[in-house]
Image (tube, rainbow, N blue to C red; front, top):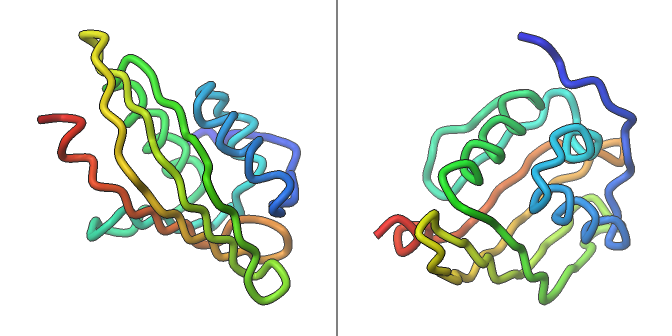
Length: 130
């Protein structure tokens, strides 16, 4: 596959809001900059998704099923000097019919060399597609 070439951006508590702004804007290149090339994405109890391209495709694919996506970040913690970043959020999902469903979520990010190596996201998306 064609790799998304991007400048890499160090993930810190300070840059977390930009990562989610890029996600909300569906800016694949900016999103990819935060991820290790061998990132692993695990969504809830789903199967692991390997590699930056597949990760970005999954995130943009989820958003494409919706009319819009907005992450409202409540708390961002750095654990063990930034090796782990934990984010508590509400995800506001706008359906294609214009209705909005808001669901709570938590992301746990494992950081290696300043980039996200493991991205675990916990959000109950069932109400969004109900």
